[in-house]
Image 1 (cartoon, one colour):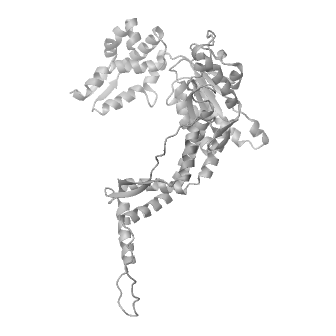
Image 2 (tube, helix red, strand yellow):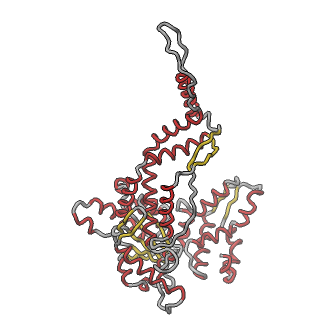
Length: 461
């Protein structure tokens, strides 16, 4: 992780950033902010105890739709570190067909490599662009072949420009036009490497996805690269050639070394839906439960600290931070195997949302649903406005339906707003009036019957 960048964000600042998008859940935000800051603190420790400081893994517990997954999404942007979010339910025990849990770390290393490569690319962008311009000028204006030997002029004899000098002058004129954008729409033909390789699937201990890439590298070294001709505009050609030149300037060994260092010291894994691999007390060991405990057992060494083989080399997971989350509707946290519970020492319970929370969710976040619909309808030239009493009505109805039917948290607002605005979204292109005000009466008239009819609300809202 770029230590200087993380140093700028104190736990209070991290919480403030999360507040822009997530309403309430202050305890969860505080714990996540402390865990993120501790990554930086550990890297500042100078003594040998630094290697002994282990991350405190967190488990977030709360009903669906209260902000668990949203916290992970926002955290990924704040962390500026290799970050991967995975659903625990998509992994299978070793020996079953499917992905094993070690592929989480392989994905994390891939993300780390891409992150470092992107940073290195930005650093060499200027030099790569200069080299791309020279290559493009060679395509636009090929060097003329000398037809015969020029006679050497005697002293005092008047000489014309040599073909080389004329070529250089013309090249400079083309360079000026290229930089001014006058040649942008002109078409050129480029020789670009063809990326297509024969598709092969091989079952091996390290997984299909790993072997596929190793086979590709093997064949890539044995056979010459196939080139294909592409017709593109000068503007597109400059972008493609700049990318190609940047790849040549980047030292991939240094990229991989830095990426593995970042993953080992500041990588974060967010394990969503961890409750789906917990066996509920009533399970009898048959059906889909049969490999759930197996996935938990496979997770143990990865969370505790092990060495995972990736195509970039060995990666130690001792200092990777794991944040797990789950609704735990059917299973309970105590249904996880005891060893895995011990690997997640910090438990944070997220609260169910109240009517006031719904009201704040509709207005305060930068990506509030009401703001999204306003921007969508602005494209049709319609100015959409929600009054205070309309927002209060929507919040109360969301809370009421959640209490009567399944509690799906803030996701209930999606269903209510899409039902409420259905006619408006359908008729918007043909509407004469360009100003639409949604008030409390409109909300009540539109949704009252549906909310009161319990059977209907189960299907519509």
